[in-house]
Length: 355
Image (tube, rainbow, N blue to C red):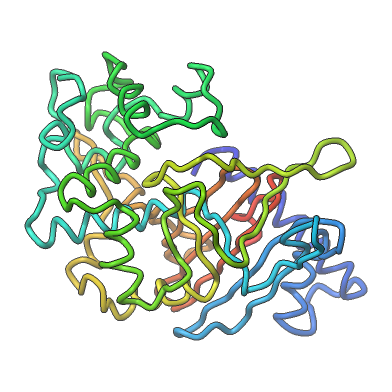
């Protein structure tokens, strides 16, 4: 975990403890779990503030779900489990799931060179494989950073062919594939392109057909069409001085590294598939949670769009996401069959610590 993430968790854990203490008159133990959660999210539970929707899953049941603050300040629409959120890099596990399904079907191999599918990329001297992309060990420079350096704003119209050309113009890597681990959105965007080139379907369509429809995730999609209208879409915000400003990027349509819109109820169905894998089966599930390794054999904590770790001695499977003013965290304790979901629409919120 990066230092800023550790710091953020510490700060928000302290803030949450203070909020709980204040809400319970100084007692350290709230009257109920619901009261404890309410206290954590109390700072945003106002009619003039964006906030979060929270879900808690135990043994396959949604035992808590509630919205705090507003989903849309223009129309005074509150956050709630009925709302649809952009979840940023939480999307990566769905892209990786698609790649793992295709590998299981024999349509690709994780050890295939990327240039077999994306010949537009330069020959970097050392073969870069799909496995390198999955585990962020490719050495590819990050596409969002490259866009920024090139004066391309996230809200600009930026076709996929231009995105690929931007990546391909980089004649060198940050390191030889497999030598190091560096989070790269380029890798996951390319994985989405590979899904399309192998199947003839966009990542959006393949994921809908192979993952979302079989699991009944009817309100989840990869957002590759900026003009697509969806019911109950949440607006995201940032804070400037003493006011909130809209932080949505209406033209942004890059998927694979991000791009997923979903709901608490649909994530409940996705979570259930990690205990009873109706999509993928047992071998797929094992693959999804298998961490990568560097060339020297050192294990990583990053698996297939999921980070494997521990919290207070308990095993965790998690991923966060952030883009625009959206912030998200999916935190699973698989041995306890418990998952915390935190979907927020304010840029200053750090959901990992809250989860």
